[in-house]
Image (cartoon, rainbow, N blue to C red):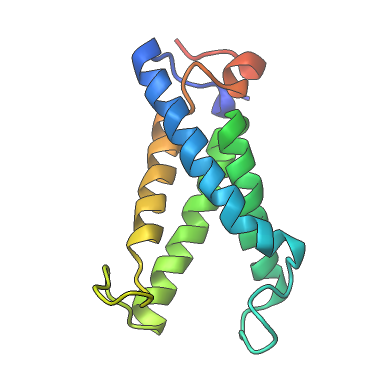
Length: 142
């Protein structure tokens, strides 16, 4: 399980990763909570997206957020969330033609999905830090 062993990092960097995991993990749990209540139909009957993909997004957001909060299976959670945010960005840009940032209140944009994608990539590459369940369960890479 070398994949789940976090890199050895300073306490300072690990504290920053912990704060990031807690805040963004909670945001994903809250975004995914409504979706996980109806995982194969949260987009509505006319969405055109198969239920299995809706379920993957719901599990990715809710479960991935919980995993980030705990720092457990962080690479797997980060990969799932990165895939979900990549699809969200593609949908907003290619399908809906939304801008990166909207200056109109209530209008759609994709900057939040892009920011979440960056966090997922960071946690995928840097790992959860030393204050994580991954470190307790899998140890630490030298």
